[in-house]
Image (cartoon, rainbow, N blue to C red):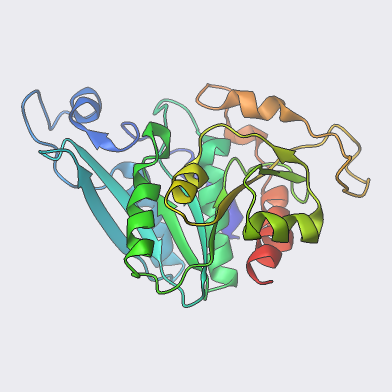
Length: 265
């Protein structure tokens, strides 16, 4: 099952977020001060490309740069569809020494699982969220140039390793926000920075969605009054963000019973 790939993915260690001269100097023996970084994918990107090939999913590796050298190089992975809807999840990390399980490895695996279920949906695995949204800015520019034809909205997955059908969305009013509220009536939070902020700054409708464990018994039905356990949010970028906290059952439930229904309405 595709969701089980989270365990292998979390074993892969990167040398940081997007590739910079600083990252390469610190984490690889092949680059030193004054040398330009080469546009070669980091280990987590290589893992994802291999996984997509194993799953028979066509992809485009979009390598892009920022700066004069460029001093920053990013890698977006594009899984094209033919609908007007897009799903994104960032694959980059802030701490290369930990599992980065919930932030945001689980969301990347969930996005690939959704693509297997719904090949018509555009899916993009983004780089650079942890350093300001470089990957989402890149895709925003591509959307505005018409490279994905018409895109009505971008649904953004964050920290989706636990929670299943119990989730919240960011306070980002617009057609997508209204649709999700109408379908599920989840709670709304004022969220910290995420890629939806970049899409929205470019005039593209976007909303972030984030499942969370609940403090109530798992057998209870979900509704907007259910108390969510937000403690897992505070583990981001720390050694507590381990794969042991992830539930593949809840990943599957969230992807197939929530995300799929949103994107196919």
